[in-house]
Amino acid sequence: MIKNILFDQGGVIVDLDSRRCIDALLRLGMADPEQFIGLYAQAGPFAALEAGTMSVDEFHRVLLPEFPANVSASDLDEAFQSFIVGIPLHRLQAITELRRNYKTYILSNTNPIMMNGVLARNFAQDGKTVHDYFDGLILSYEAGCCKPERHIFDYAVERYGIRPEESLFLDDGQVNVDAARNLGFHAALVPPGTEFVEVLRHELNLTL
Image 1 (cartoon, rainbow, N blue to C red):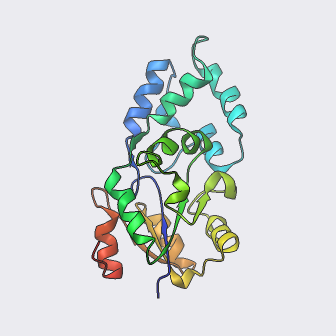
Image 2: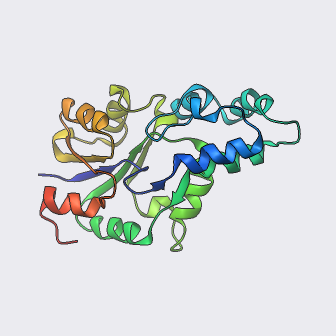
């Protein structure tokens, strides 16, 4: 019996556009942002920020020399956050409905710049906060590793007492779905262009 639903953020709850981020960084003067920015995974300092091995201050210190001298840390953060297109309100409303019968969690690769900036603003669009939608947050930079590594799933189990066999994990990356299944979670892929409610209707016979 499923008691918990764990959501990836990007591509499941949050609409993304890596091209917007790359173009914004190019406009600021970064030579080759495509070596760092990908739709499913980041590299270099961007990956280190997500994995929690680099602080926001260190991130700024490492990356700002890649830009003209007039570019500030806030300019860099704004360009980076253009990766996020937004969160359609109907998805937040669906999560509110799910909480009537399930515990809900985020389990996501992300970073503190976005969580405290553009994502916080998007989760607040209906006068709430991210904590009004979820029973817990499993964030890569707090767990100290990124999906599909085992530790982030173990971190969820240990921190929130989640039993994998009672939990359904939704992700838009097959490698992450496979990793969760290998650890005993129920898991389902949310393909591009698919709403997670469609997947939940199939997996749990819901009428959302």
